[in-house]
Length: 210
Image (tube, rainbow, N blue to C red):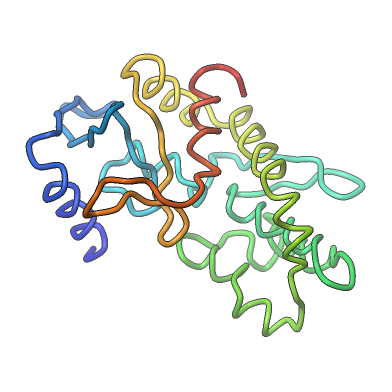
């Protein structure tokens, strides 16, 4: 709650009156959308409004989604869990399919939500498992993996598609994904820092490209 309030107050402080109200997609209440040179909306797992929060990779897709995985296909609850599963296929010493399967819907991590999803595939978890991510191989593979996962979610999640289309085609917004320390806008200058892997893919979904 503190993080959500801080993020909201930062938007108010930095942008001041350079904001506009837009009608929520699902209710008649209004939410503040930040504006820069182009109007933009920021997606993150702790967003204040349901629409942008729903586009987060942490959201569990209704009915799950299936993707080609290994020699077959596996079912995942969220993009975040599927993303971590793929990390287990890019380890120093070779892939660990047994660990990757823990992130499927039938695995021990398969129904984790919110921060639990991230923790299951984080550095501490790797250390406890005694495995090391092959950083070079993972960094090379991660963009195409994320693209595959967002494409799979797009095929399975009608609500996800509807929100992306509304933001991009109807409201003409640029979708960006806030990730602490990875991609963000400076509080002082408004300059963007880091690399946004997810935002452009959401724009592609909203544009009908992906």
